[in-house]
Length: 228
Image (cartoon, rainbow, N blue to C red; front, side):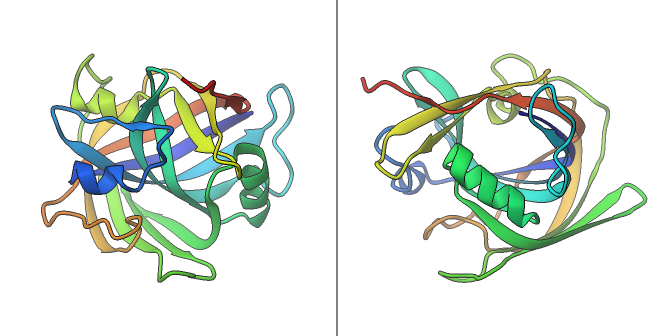
């Protein structure tokens, strides 16, 4: 399927690798950069959601989303592992859970724009296991650039597949195609963030921040990853 991602913030925290590794299934391997593990939180808007070659889907083509993610490999291929994906569209949540086996949740999400600042508020509906809330304001603060090969920016953003496990614990991969990210430096004020998975603690130091205005994406169906 195709979709467009708009006004995306990449907020990444350096976290304890052992603590993060314990939250992953055995089928994937945590990836680190210069020995550091990273947890990412990415608020953005999805628009023009459509099956490839068709028009946008009525009732679910545009909505707000908040992802919590880290970076893994399986079979030698780097990709994204999602701990959670909160979305403002109930239809999108139900479809993505069935189709991509991802931990999607419905949330009340609002995003407003004041000049260059985007004010973003998300609260998961039916907060089983505690509140899952993210409240922040963010904006770009520099010129557009593409990540250099081998850089931290490339490691955190240039990911071309996602991984998920089904109800039987079998690993699947979905390919993601898009141009290189048009990144900008960013600034943000995170007022409340209870999105970290499990008992993972975020450090006191602020996150590494990047902004992307728009990105067109094609996501292919899940395919089973053969066991090693």
